[in-house]
Length: 206
Image 1 (cartoon, helix red, strand yellow):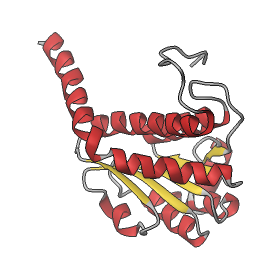
Image 2 (tube, helix red, strand yellow; image 1 turned 90 degrees about the vertical axis):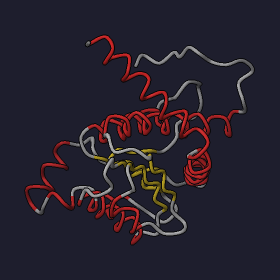
Image 3 (cartoon, helix red, strand yellow; image 1 turned 45 degrees about the horizontal axis):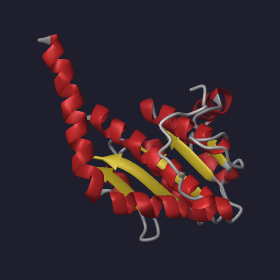
Image 4 (tube, helix red, strand yellow; image 1 turned 120 degrees about the vertical axis):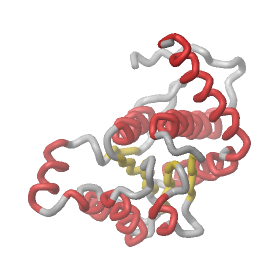
């Protein structure tokens, strides 16, 4: 019983990835181009999310400032989820809704990218972050699930929306991680060229 359930988890995840390979690829390409244009033009990526999405946002920033698979110059990225003192201070002195928005207004500039991850697209602090990014004339790359929630309604034509067509948060998060890896790989490919052979190993300690 348990073995079959575990196997089904693998199958469900693989099926969703296969389904999204063609449908989401154009949006992932657009997101990669937006991120690349920002960091090569002197801008940066500010990433944020809640819970498991916060961990994904931090993972993305680490891959940009450090490396994904290949050595390259550092790229400017910052996770708005990483500083506990800032997060708890803002939540205590103001309200939880503004913990990302105030950081975006403090750190964001025109030409930067806000990478916003929300499986539901309805988290109030994420919606406020998107509004703050627009006020700073930033591009928003939104990773959501289901139908995008209220975040989808806030996005502009110049933003990029990658919406995983699923309702289970675990499946959505798995696709979000893959999308983030694709963005990192795509940026590296544009900066460094395609590797001569597929790189199935990484020197990273993570």
